[in-house]
Length: 457
Image 1 (cartoon, rainbow, N blue to C red):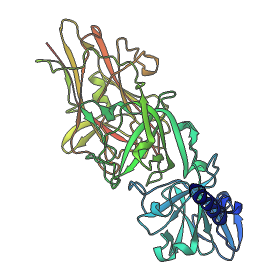
Image 2 (cartoon, rainbow, N blue to C red):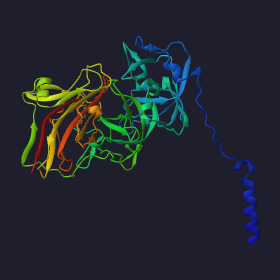
Image 3 (cartoon, helix red, strand yellow):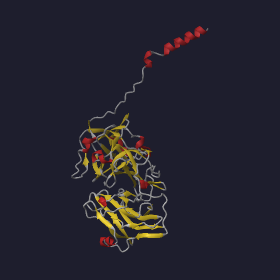
Image 4 (cartoon, one colour):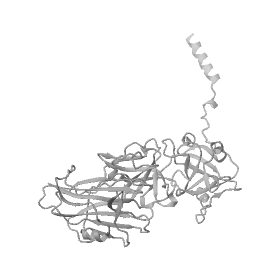
């Protein structure tokens, strides 16, 4: 009986299974079929005439281009647009296409290969980058959701996008809309203080976007990480270490400077220690002294002559004319500096205090108030010297850990930001230097200085 069952089972298996049934399924990806010729993103962009700035419309070309998606609206940091580049690795050109759909990532996910039909599309230069869409008078608008399939063909292929490793100094318009990586960078120290951490885009100064300055640990060069105030991660606090950032390289809304836009906060990998300079500082918990050693609130200072008579040094060290300027702000006299509307690039302006005599004091605390406005980057630093030569360029300066404010891009903050620094251990005589290093037209943040005071016990 057992032999009969075994024989029956063997016959059953042989009758149901053939060798052909063991063949692997066909895993070949079938690319979409279309009628027309293929071109490149670089060739597409070459049609735009920057000298006229006129919208360019593609007609009767029978042409498509292939591209890879490098943006994602999953976290809300991109809205109704796809950023496309020509290759998944070592890309050479990128472009944006406007699509009237607020959940693009569900269909056009990161790394997805697409084919874009050009005929009927228009191209315009907007917010510092080239964008594709439909022409609406003198502008280009998003393709309606009902028409997206007429212009965008989705491949089944999803590629690994290898970020293009760049240095901040490498940024150029040719690299706009590419997915990049910055290595060995960190956020400006002012943004990640232990008791005053900034979020990505939910602080009082943030209007439409949060602009957070990144600095290179190798060169000191800076750029801006831009986050939409509608992003899901806008309220997350900035990481305080150093490391790498991956995102799309593009321009800010006003086309004033380059920015990096994240697909998600996980693309910031700050696992290293910070690379801050060694600040001149005598304690981490300074307290105001009970007596005033020196004080200047700039009341009555209406000209540089008056400022000089009070032994302040106010110089332009870059060969231009712009200096710190006495200004009346909301009825209050302040000193103001900005590169806006100056045509000076770079603009290096120094304001140096009179000699501050600390001899005979057990403690000495420096304090001052700063206000920022029309912010497009942090361009102010504060230093101390024990031997001022009379020329900031020939003086040996040590950096101070000042509390540089972040301001809104289109207005001023309503409140000044105070810095308090213990300078008790720095010697009998010191000078404080405020260095503004901006440049027209894209590094023009305005700063106001008030209530400079040295107190002690």
